[in-house]
Structures are given as C-alpha cells and as structure tokens.
Image (cartoon, rainbow, N blue to C red; front, side):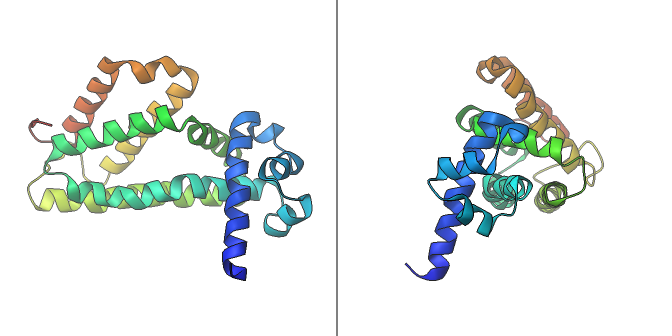
Length: 203
C-alpha cells in the first residue's frame, strides 16, 4: 500500500467511525476519543488528519452524501418520463431512510451545527447548492426532450423537490413507522410526478 493509499484508508476508516459515533451520540456527545476508539486508531493519528470534531462532522457528511449527489445527475437521463423519475426518486429515498438511518441522523446533526459559520456550514452550503444544480440540469434536459412539463417555474423546482425529499427523511427520524406506510410513499410519488409534470406510466 502506497503512502497515498494508506492516508486515504486511514481517513475513510476514521470517517466511517465518525458517522456511526455522531449518529449514536450526536454532535454534542461525540468526542475525539470516542471516534478514535471506534476507528481503532490513536488520538494522535486522528488529530493528524482532522483537527476537531467539527471538521470530522463536515468531512463525514461529505463522505456519506457525496456519492449520492454524484449519482443523482444520471437519474434524470435514465428516466423515460416524469412518472418514471418520480418513481425512482421515491423508491431511492425510501430505501435510503430505511437502510441507512445513520446518514439521516448525521444530516440532522450537520444541519444543526451549520447554523453557525465554520467548516460544517461551508460543506452544507456547498451540498445545498450542488444538489439543486444537478437536478436543474437534469430537469432542463427532460423538458427540452419533452419528457417533463413542470407545473412550476423550472428554476424553483429543484428546491421544492429537495425540500420534499429531505423533509421526508427528517420526519422519519422522529417517526420511523412512516417508512412502512405505503400510502404515504404513493402520495409522495404522485406529488413529485405532478410537480415535474406528465402522465403516469407503467412502472
């Protein structure tokens, strides 16, 4: 393993442990010692890569949600129409909150800390700008090809979709039983389809 590979391995090991620790204890209850113990590394090594728990939270958030944003752009090109896109977004959101509750808990912690200037706020702002930007590009291509007919101004649609998808995830953190409510998810899919515009199709 090269020095670069070793560094990347150590960072991912620490950040993975940080995600679990932050989700379990919250930002206020997470310490460098707890994360180091969970990662099986020394406090010194952890400090070498990450100066404090706020930097850890910022980088852990990026690790947890970065791949999701990279994947998002392709979803709009895969969908044949608005109904199929609404189905894909709904299914993937439901799977995410059901299978990865730690990431949703991490998002809540990051949003709370992001109220104040610092690395977490910088990271969250970058993510909140990136996600709608990717959506806007995809929606613009769908509209240009006649696959979507938005019922609201196109430049506002990504923000509305982000609010709907993220808001559902946050609700489920407090009411986990909602993830099994099929009617709720069907209603959410219908709402997304209506916003994007277009007739329903067979899934």
